[in-house]
Image 1: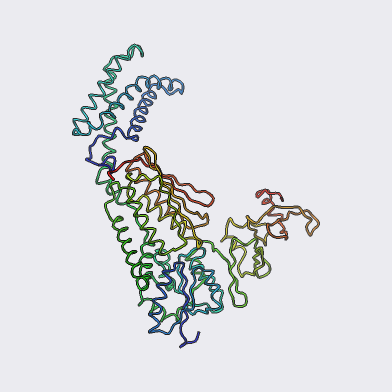
Image 2: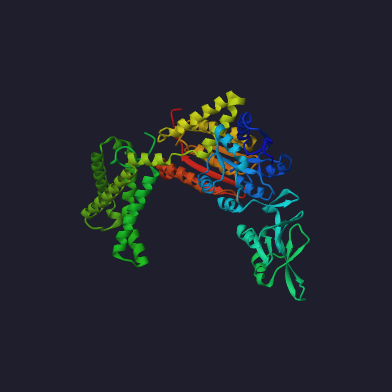
Length: 256
Length: 336
């Protein structure tokens, strides 16, 4: 963003009247502050999809939204090389507001006052970028999506669509029925975050419980028998390590 | 007065036509019989025998008393407290004496009648004391305080989002903004009113429609409501703010967490002496914290208990993809 060029603002809120209201206020602000409405999104996913075209300098994010809330969306935005400034908007959220004060995170209370919005936008270019650890602390619940930056674009991966997560060298591979994504996260942290959704079948592999169709015996590399996981929607088999063999009994499914 | 069961003076006779009161009397008297039996023996079989012995003497007296008390309930309540108590005591002594002499042939020798008088006085005294204490615990001041504390509170979240929605309308469609503000005024008038008295069910439904109109402003197509009020008892009275908070819950937990449209289904029906309310909304197992929901349900459940004791019930069921609340309350007819 270049100083002097109009500030590009992206509005993210699931309620149409709330977006209308912000648009009205932004056009009032535009009389005194050069700005442009870069776009409007009703969900986190829509917002992410709009990013390349909208190229916003500032995003006004509603906190409580269906599917993906504003705080999680802000986490995914950090995957960008130059994340936009984020100003949260909320009608009422006692806990988040306390935390925002503590960490000097910018927010506006709905109904938003013109003066406050103007002030926040005037300072937008100097807003200190959000920190991932602060955002994680604000919302410790498991994320609904994981995200990766591919050639400057953010891709979202719905956690429910992930069949398995596998650690390989520096990266973790997330496999969905369609394709693979390389994540820069640790397998242990992912296991902790999504406790219950995934089961560890191997030192380097977590499989979604819901994706396990069954188990079958195969001959391992050392020539000895070994259990393999049969997945729903994928031909690939995943090895169960000897240390994790009890899960074959626990999940107790035989291949159909 | 049809608001709270026990809410006149601190010392007031219980309503002998209330199922909860009758159940309490039955349980307490039989409990005392059991304790009397326990004093004599603790061997299970002997205990059972002794208890049955005592009960056979007790039950006819007890049932006759309950019948008579229920029959003269209205008349008793017109008396002052102490004359009414004297009447009840005299009545009990008469009944026990009558049954003693009538039943002499049946029960064989059962000791001097004075023994039964003492026992009757004791039980009657305990019951009167118990209901007096209970009456005080539910006395107007306390009940009012409890009810006020319990009064369904609207979520601040809803208040501020609605104001925000109305603000967004002012420039574009001032008329819709006017309507919305009128709905809000009505809603808050009821929320801030003294809500101890029962209200016509039609009024509560009107309030619900105003509330839903406000939510519709914000949520648009995402919020769909299916009313089934074919069996609605138009003259029924219900405690105020029983339905509206349930709808608010349904919107907060069932509609808001999804960007796809969801349906809230509300069915109200009745038979001769009960009103049935069933409310169903979509449910997401991986949804949000549900503490707020449980609190609202506990709140409504307690208010139903204060109004109707055990004659009303509230049940919540979670199925695979829906959440259902069922309420049964006695069908009280208003002058509507």
